[in-house]
Length: 356
Image (cartoon, rainbow, N blue to C red; front, side):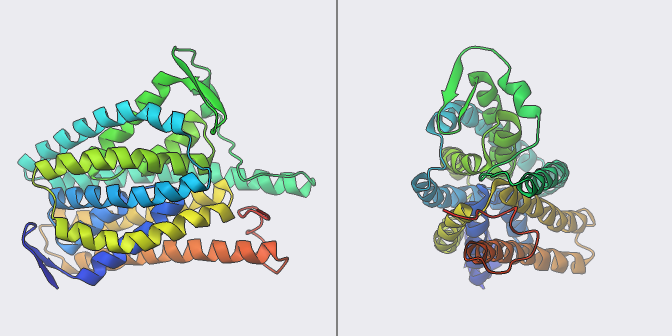
C-alpha cells in the first residue's frame, strides 16, 4: 500500500501499474484511452470520483503519445481528419470539465460518473455487437464465394447519410479515403470532447464508433486517428484537471510506467487483425466495464452497506482487463498460425489478416 497524499488515500502500487499495463494493451489495440475502464477502477481502488477522473485523464495523455507514434508508423492515422476534429474536441473538453466540477460541488461526482457510464456503454455495446456480427457474416459469405476481402468491412449504412451532407467546407481525407463536410467532423469532436472532459477519458470509447459509423473511416484508421485526437483532448484535459486540483501525479506516474509497455504491444497487434475483430474487442470492453461500474454504483447508492459489492467490483474490474488482454494476445497467436497454414478455430479466419 502507498500513501497518496494529494488524493488522501492508501492504494496498492502493483494494482495501479497492472491497470496501466493492461489498459495500455487494450487502448493501443482498440484506439481508446481506456478511461471508461480506468476511471471506475480508480474509484473502486478508493480514489474520489473527481480525483479518479483527473488522474486517468493525465495518464491517458502520456499513454496516447506512445500509441500514436506506433500507429503513425503503421499508416493508421489520417492527419486531415484528426486535426479537423481538434477545435470541436477542445470546446467539448472544456464543457465536460465544467460539468464535472458542477457535480463535484454537489458532492455527486462518483454517482454521476458511474450512472452515465453504464447508460452510454450499454447502448454502444448493443449497436457495435449487432453491426460487427453482420460484418463477420458478410466476410464469411464473400470468402465462401472465393472473393478477396481486405482488412475492413462494415455493413452500417449510417456513414452514407452523413457523407451525403453537402454543407461547406467539404474536406478530403486521403488516408481514410473519404470526402465529408467539415461540420460533421467538428460535431463529432464536440460530442466526444464533452465525454472526455466529464469522464476523465480520451473519449475514444465513443469516438472510434463515431468515426466508423458516422464519418465512415475504416476501423484501423479510426483507431490511429482517435489516439492522435486523445493526445490533444487528453493533454488539454490533464491541464484543466490539474488546475482544478483533481490530479495526484504520483499515481499518474505509476500508471504510465505500466502503460508504456502495454501500449506498444496493443498498437502492433492491430496489424494482425481485420476491422471487425477490433470492433468486437471494443464492444466486449464496453459491456465488461459496464458490469464493474454497475456493481460500484449499487454499492455507492446503498451507502456502502454491502461490502461484498465493492469486493466484486474490484475483482471484476481487474478481471475484465486481464481477459481482454488475453483475448488480444490469442488473436495475434491465431493470426500467426493462420498465416503459417496451421489449424485455427473456424471463427478466426474472418477476423485476422491472412498475409502482410
